[in-house]
View 1 (cartoon, one colour):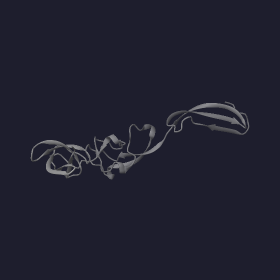
View 2: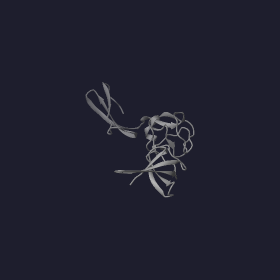
View 3: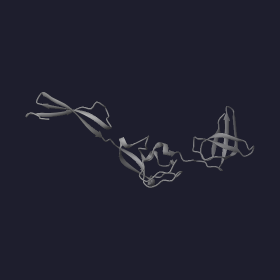
View 4: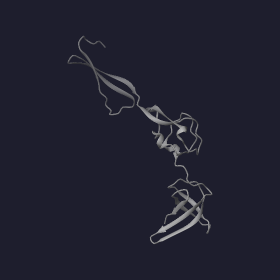
Length: 174
């Protein structure tokens, strides 16, 4: 394209508010106050974001520590799924699957660490207005605080489901 002599201005405008990936950008070329020409330029927009990745290989069911993790800058266009963006959001959680060194951690890869494991003894609590009963039970499956787990009443042998409160207590919901 030939551009006549004069004060040349090049202006661009994006049709999208937050363009990411491959975009086509209209570029206006002006000479002085006169409009010259609009050309469309194809570009690739990279958006760097901080993510949390495995510093080394992480085993399934491993409780994560800060030493297991690192932050990296990654192009947002290459991220698939909801990734962990802060170390604080991952430390203390458990890997649901094996994670390779350098691999970004996704929210779906992590779970709360169990506070009870199969075979643990907990106090079962049943409460309703004016009534509170307790009994001991054996946990039948690992569970995190807030999870509902199978627990077998030690006295009756009856298996029931109770919400795990902490490492020592589970509440039976009526």
